[in-house]
Image (cartoon, rainbow, N blue to C red; front, side):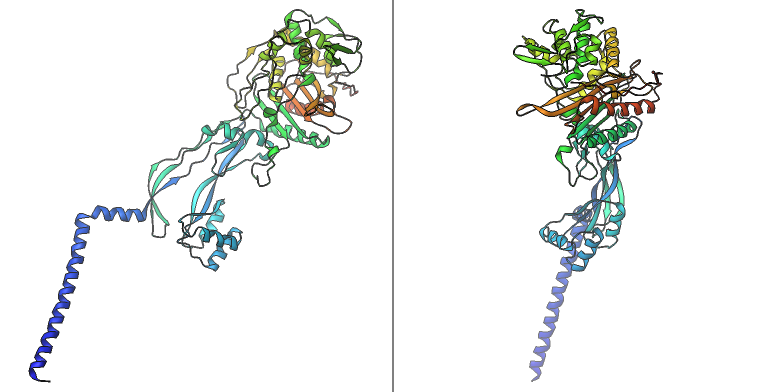
Length: 570
């Protein structure tokens, strides 16, 4: 190689080096220029992008309002829980990781794998809702990327199936679905708050920066129930339904002075804390939703109306011979021929003919008008979801046979709650109180009957629970009891069944100064005993007897004799 060629090669190499340095310098200038541009002119953009990746606004859970009985005992509470969730795009699809998570949660690894595959394109997937905080911490301690937890609340019902029909339940998001949880959802519902938090790139919270809106918990709902009496009523009703192999049963216990529901139970029931195998037939609050023909328990009102009219006097006597009465081609029967009966005797022997003949002597519309005043044919106004109104015929041009059958409880329908509300009129000197599922602070009432009329009727009802009366098994040692039995043929698709009955008893205690009203209904009892006085009256005796002692109501009967003779009824 000559000298000139070497010089040319050196010159070319020098130019290449210069070009490289020029390119590097240009690139450096571009980078520096871009940095200057971002920091001087786009700093807000950079800050926003950083915040998007590290700052989050998250909800602050708030607890739903508690439901309590009248003494503050909890019937529904919200307990803190955690919900585990996964970001499938961050979660490692490793068999060992999946196995560890599934093992901690006691779920199938294969099932979790399939779910992760199904949600692979998404950024959110529930792993398990509402687990205990301890279990959530055990899973999070695995420190698996893409696995997170949310703080939530879960509804819990301490009394379980005992108050389930009345309290109801919520769904997994704590929204009321049944009972008072649904009716008062607006009152109980909580409003979550909001907070700003700082997170790392893995989505883990580093610290809370600020509370934007504080959470607003739901309000407490104070019911009229006395949980002590609710447990008592539930136990006795369940035992009676099982003993008589009945289809169902209901019991309503009221404060006679205020209209408050102290206990309301049904069978069959359900556990609101475990609804995995829930039978829909067990959800209904039969005492307020189902309708029945009341039968003979309506007769005290027919007699009260007759006395209120002035057409009849307490000393009048009615001839019921020969125990059978034909009216408009239909036959009205008594259990047997009772002959001439006093008004008290009509109740004692539950005479259909006796009340029919009385009512047929009254003005045509009087019976229906008073039934309407007692609340028959319309809902009680408790606000319970699905509460039945019942059926009461109109008063215009009502036939004589219709008036007769209405007088002894056929041809109209009502809920057990409506019947119990009406019995408060007899218990509280003719005053009708609104039925209330909430604790009442200022009782209100409407006068229906003259106080002397109700006093006379209650005295007659006492005889029905004494020896020789149809409701003698309702007697409570130490207390005077007034009540009336009823045994109604059930109405089916083919009319009234010959061997299917509703056994009922409605009563008041203590009769001298009534404090409690209770109505018991047993649906389709099996066996030889199916009358209301045999099936429902003993439940009344046990529940009301214990309730009077729990409430420390002084005895009003010093007669030590308790006759247990058996008598028939209709």
